[in-house]
Image (cartoon, rainbow, N blue to C red; front, side, top):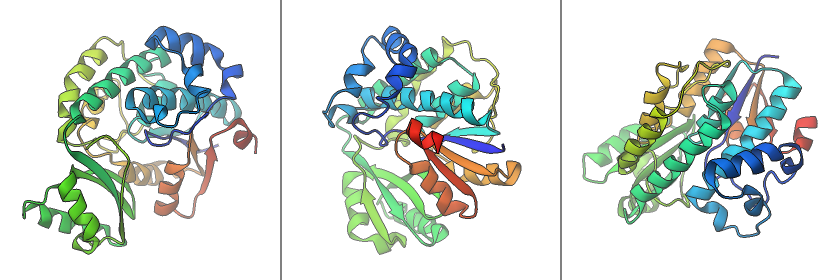
Length: 302
């Protein structure tokens, strides 16, 4: 089957997600997770504290681990995919399943990445917002116009044909929220995040992530992975630079979708992991294709 696996990033977490996997993948979710990070994921899975799983240092390893295990199950049932992609954090899930590095190595990088990104945004007075538009080209042009008028807005994510995510100082984000027509937007939705991720605000995080990646023996993957940084397939030689640059560059998810469609013409796109956000992005960009969401063992069986 010609199918694509897609993995979500932070913001997709839900209370109790992946609890059913503790029985089938306890070695990864309990033993290896604890050995790698020094804290227990099963306590988080069984927690009812929604605020706890919003914390970057908790949410990112949790989402990665659950998505990875559902990815293993999907490959077991459907065979090897034609390619893998991930949205921001989800890129690490794709790369680990492909074999560029191990599950344990990915956890260690993710932990450092989350900690350093969180440090970078603390007290930055920055945030993010989703911008819904019916004319992406015009919206991008008008954001450039605002930037020339000292209202500074950065584009953090190109998600699909009708949505980007922007970041900036909270005052500037409030301006576009109150004046959506200033950037030809139908609606602007503030996001509950700690600050301006995928912007220059988090550039300081790159140093420690690079150090951690230097300690890993990166191998050549077995499944092609299209990268957020440039929308293209990675290789062992280009992987580290792409992951480091991903931290403060725009996530080019829309380009990834279009490149895969043009180059591989897949029959099926599968969102794998909590939520269904990447499925929605493909649906808005390539509405004619079959799209499936795998966020439970039951959904995989159907």
